[in-house]
Length: 81
Image (cartoon, rainbow, N blue to C red; front, side):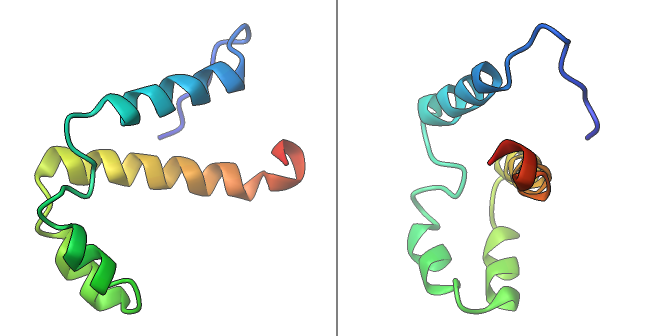
């Protein structure tokens, strides 16, 4: 959760690697099968939680890490624009 980048790592390069990883997945994290359920659950946190519980464990864990990363990025928006 608190992994630090090596000093020589460019955050833009790290973002590009993450983007490439997500793009190259054979199926989206939210899966094709659950697409309509996710779309329909957007207005209710409880409904969304129930849909997310249906995700395969690997998808759920990856989604959890990605959203945690996005939260950290947004918390530093004054620095990273």
